[in-house]
Length: 124
Image (tube, rainbow, N blue to C red; front, side, top):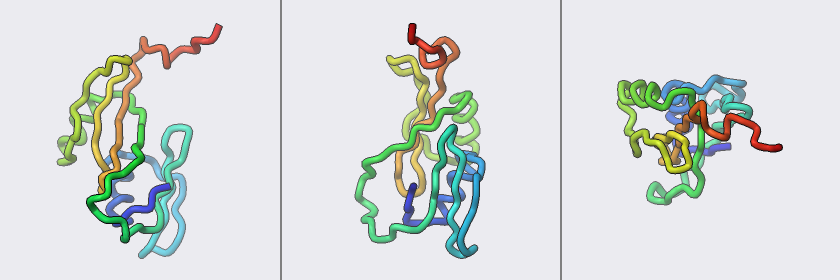
């Protein structure tokens, strides 16, 4: 659950920029809560946290798997999203790109290549 400083900006970010599908919405229109599908999980954006100082760095990051990091990079650049870290393949084999939500929460967009061990059950 995320309690952002600007509820509407964060809902727009996760819905319109990141492209998460809505699972459900609740509450009054002026102060809605929205629950998004995030893979096999859900991400709720509701309430607000206006008292958190803007300089306070988040201690949490979101890790969202995408099918094609390069396609997301192109799409997000076209939307004017600030890319904190360009896509690159990490030593552990995943392709990662980093952006931030409106509150500065780091969001990793991660592609698991077809030949990566995460794609296969490694148990014997």
